[in-house]
Length: 265
Image 1 (cartoon, rainbow, N blue to C red):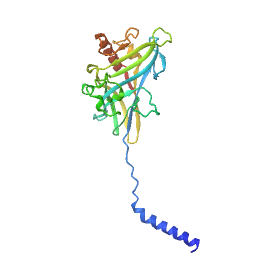
Image 2: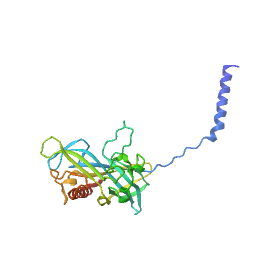
Image 3: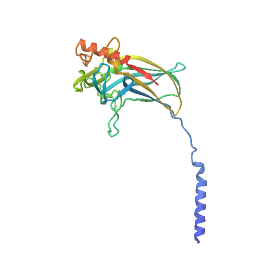
Image 4: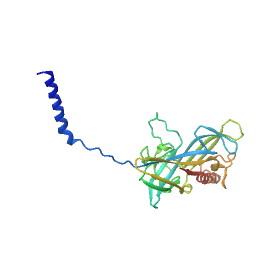
């Protein structure tokens, strides 16, 4: 058999094979992916963002270095323009520690994301801390990636109630650069849960789209402004329940934390 005939037979076989199978190849179908909404938290000082381990001078002239900031938000809800309300998460853990792509263990970051329904939205609502039913949960019963698991290290002691907010910093309150002064605010008690923070905005989002709401925590408002101002030279540490004065400081810090939060699109 000549080479030309062999080529023709092979071509004919391939054509028949493809022709015979063409009806079994499924048609391409496009499935919509729900929109993604990101809540991106920031600490700001005079309009500028503060990152962990970044020195800055605050309103009182103190040299500061923010070491840690992590907290819970709960009962996160979105309200559509038509007034309908949807709960997009029962609880989330916000941790300002940057995500390390080399590490394999669970990490959370400061920008939780949610898959939501397409539509027009006008309000975001959430609480800071944990409502009593979640605060009483046993962290050992949750998988590692869950916000209430032991891997957040937010429980006071093993399998007990949780700390709601942890803020840790180093400071020099004398105007120098020797940051040896501890700023430690660890809050958490049922009475310190703050619910129903409401932020209005306008957002239209469709399938396949991604959008971000930026949530700022103002450092000056957190400590120095309003009726519950905190003197960091005298009031720099609280673990909430050690003394009545300890609780008072934790309560004022919690109130200030709420007042310091604002939303920008």
